[in-house]
Length: 180
Image (cartoon, rainbow, N blue to C red; front, side, top):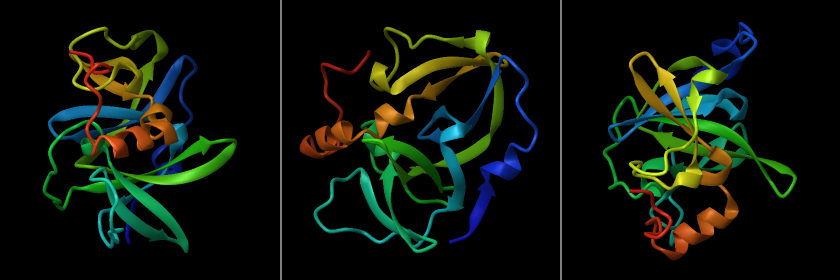
């Protein structure tokens, strides 16, 4: 598995005070971002071992320097249909805390764009309507140029409770919790 980028190399310069850094990426036709403090590295999609009887949103596992890392299809978590793997498909390795322990999880995305520096005053609260994903998955909306990027609350998206809920629903998000 070839590493595309290490977060340390992409973020060598410190963020200016009052700004946060986010990795932007594509899932389907939408642009999302995750705070870089959660990201360990970005690798090419490949050598994912499927695990029998897993929900659709779990693509399988990878061997990352001797550690077994699950790979979650972020699009499937958001209720999008399965997409074709292309040469731009990547796995973002994120580190999240589950019950006071750090765990690495791979997040499959369609393409990785860049590290954005978004001033804190350019991040709006999650919208009450209009998003195609659950409102609790959204940390905020970052103003970038003339548009917005959806900043994900990756801890909420990848929480054990959410994974169990999605698995019980066959990978589909719940209708009552969805924001129109």
